[in-house]
Length: 157
Image 1 (cartoon, one colour):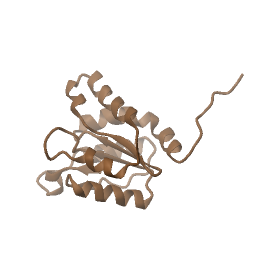
Image 2 (tube, rainbow, N blue to C red; image 1 turned 120 degrees about the horizontal axis):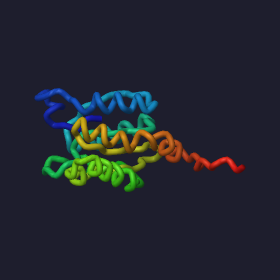
Image 3 (cartoon, rainbow, N blue to C red; image 1 turned 60 degrees about the vertical axis):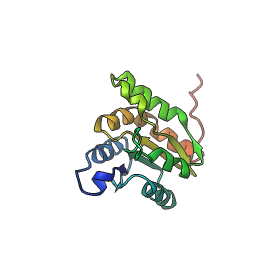
């Protein structure tokens, strides 16, 4: 889900959503989207619809910055029942370690709404790539855990 007032209004083309969709597909996800919505209440509505529809994962791009109109984390908090702070912290740390000190300014969160994993990524194509570099390797395990799966155990030997 791309969160952008201007892309939703047709002022410019969504660039981060297609990158996110491609990276999710490469991570083994069946992708439906990107859906482009303006920031604010439409984000909450779209997230609730995705939870009701039974998606395993919803990843947003955009609306995580410091401007007054960046409300994606607040709308996401209205939907999730349990936050998963380690994911958001790792995404910010990964961006900063990759040479983008401003990555720590992203206010994105991650959490569960029922069994649906919701993760906010920054709205740039670079932020999506950096975020998916963190999220991709843990995505299958996180979804399994959200559905009640057990922790993998090493084979004894």
